[in-house]
Image (cartoon, rainbow, N blue to C red; front, side, top):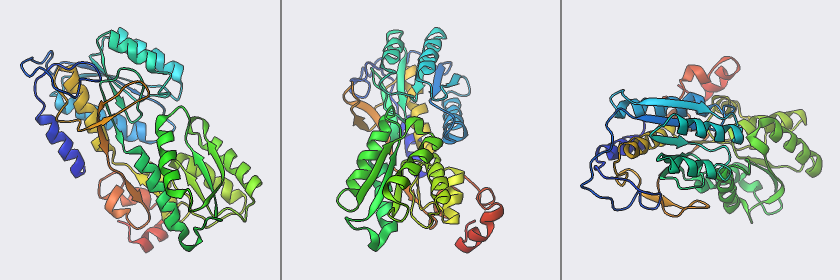
Length: 367
């Protein structure tokens, strides 16, 4: 879909036949004389964390499954399940994958720390684990995600841009972060603070349980009560779903025309951006991330090296030097909708410009 996706796909073609070892050695020098353990007839497990955020079922799952099929001449079997934000359920799902004897597991953890023992069980059973989007702990063999500190920094910088001359040390903003069980949320927060600290005052800050919009809505209501409706200049929201709950609370309090950030470029968020209700989102091109996960998973299942795919190294809470693919992100505002989500085929203009959004779309020349 984007050049990054083409580059990753090209890297997969150059994968050499070599045995892969532990997380520490999977991306290092491997025995180039070793032959692939399996052909295209492999079994891949795919576990995603929740279905409240639209991206997982709409983009991640179909993109990963499509790429796996392409890489294996349509011969691979894919076992899929969604944990629906339940860490205990996800642990049971890993057990099922072990029982079903998958060759490799792509795992997007509900709780990155809690899943550690399950990752170890899978590895003990001879199953390589690719951490997807969230950096799970335990002996994983590979990881792909976005540069999550940069995501938060992008959000924070966008909020400052929206505030313009109003961004002073006495300007009060509210920060509504993601779930503490998601390591990405901590990185988003780190990046956002690096942009905002010293430039504005963080009047209230919250970590939102399970990323739920209704929880973000309650937190925003509490912030309005504590800070005062006329004293809040902007809101940092870690993702689009929460931004929706936040904006509902702002409207109910009679607060309008203050910038709110987001992430994931969900359709509802893009429409809110068109309408001027939400200032920005972070557009994360899911195809390169999904392609990288599929390519590393297939290579690992087939006993091949991932050196030519995973160019980065990251550390988790339990592992060092994990071979990784990190994908760049873009700040999505009303000014670049055509050049991002429409150009990349994520949404059509007709999908965005429905009903009450048509006039604004026309004014913005979307389509």
